[in-house]
Length: 224
Ligand SMILES: *Cc1c(COP(=O)(O)O)cnc(C)c1O
Image 1 (cartoon, rainbow, N blue to C red):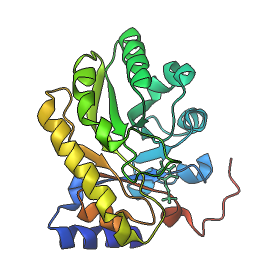
Image 2 (image 1 turned 180 degrees about the vertical axis):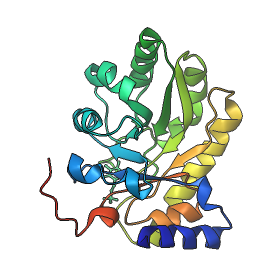
Image 3 (image 1 turned 120 degrees about the vertical axis):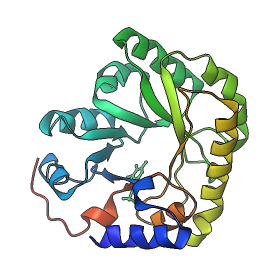
């Protein structure tokens, strides 16, 4: 309820509707038993950063949960992960895009992805350099089963207001890539904003916020 209050206030400041934003609860630090409580609280989108843990929890939770993979996907885990996820936020190389395209074709389904951008410019972060994003358009157009729904970034852990330029940069890259592509590449989403900085991200246009610690701090978890 406190997080919803903060989301609503950020929406009011930005003149946005709460319905434009999907809260993805990042369950990587809690058990499947705790994660299982979320749908009853109205949270149906859950995120994990490790494919193996996503697979484990997905088997324990209701099939109606929408799973988001938000961390690095090794190519040897693509086949098992694809059937479970509604969106992969963390596509960080052309090789991965092409491997996803091939496996999705084999499985006879499309796969919704976001392209991860290292918009904060930190050396330690995954993702495409901002300058390389526009040149992805022809690569993406050649894919048959991958559907690019938008961009994702992680801002540096710093004063939230200092994250604003990172989020604004991602929005500009999204707008430019969207103009260069046609459906099924709708390129409408911006996955940005974590516990530290989600209000600024909403003000800058986030459509997915990925929240972990702000939801689960204080949760005593002895589940599995
Ligand atoms: C862990 C994680 C989050 C959530 O981080 P919090 O600061 O706990 O909200 C969001 N995105 C990614 C990619 C993560 O790995």
